[in-house]
Length: 233
Image (tube, rainbow, N blue to C red; front, side, top):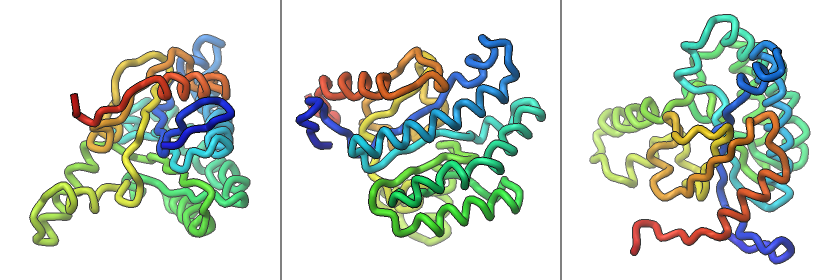
């Protein structure tokens, strides 16, 4: 991490977001849940821009979990449409500004047209040096851990921290310095369980569609006040 003397903040190298509260945001406004997810996409784009501006190099998002597939069909269909219609358009402006985009999760779940959009984003952003945006799609940490172990076994290598980490979806990323969960829920929900071993956890009651620059700066102030010990006394 580094210090931002202007704001007297310690800027994390990697921040990860569990974007929670889209459905409750919509319900409070007597709107269908898909309206909350649509608004959440807008928030995600703004948060990426704010993080890049602040100098955060790695930004991760929990967008669609392995468990989300078990939601009502109409909600899952709406999420698929949201990804299909927005993923490239949402990220194109950031790609043009030098942001690299990667995805973690089993992408084989998605339809061919969605996979083609994801592959297009990956290819067009591959040379980006400004920041790395990592989006979890059909991602679950338990599945990721089982996958990594099985791949080590298939290769015939001993499973240790180094060989295991090479087979995680996040093999090319540093572990998150801070994990942010919106909406007030106090759990990781199967997100980056291995990578989060020494991450700072910060929970805000703000619902994800309402999350903005002031919320982000408040989180960074709290992070700046914490002493990270990595298991040391």
